[in-house]
Image (tube, rainbow, N blue to C red; front, side, top):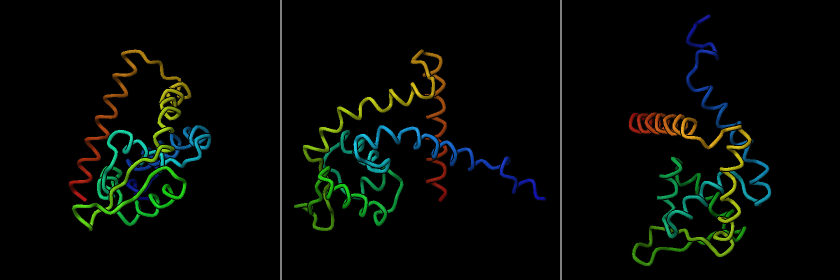
Length: 149
């Protein structure tokens, strides 16, 4: 048996498992809002900066536009956002929140807090510092992978 092919020796598996488990931990809150995790990510982008292009959303989510476009179309059908051609560049589609999409922000604001509670994370300086360090390390790894892909 090749050691490098053992699941326990893989760097990617813990990331995969953590991602799936965190998404599962969000599920009840997202179901209550009537949205999926990818839709939640899009909404977070738009709550931070409304009126962005499809390419902006795809870049932030590290996805291809052909993956993001069907997601945005479903969100438009749900009444969460609108998609309109840019007036200055017909090749660009501008994504904007609707009133319904904006209203979800207040309810969604509790989701990260509830996740921390589910994980038994206390909002003290030591634990927050540890998670900030981990987040920064993950962002560095993301940048490394994006630049070498």
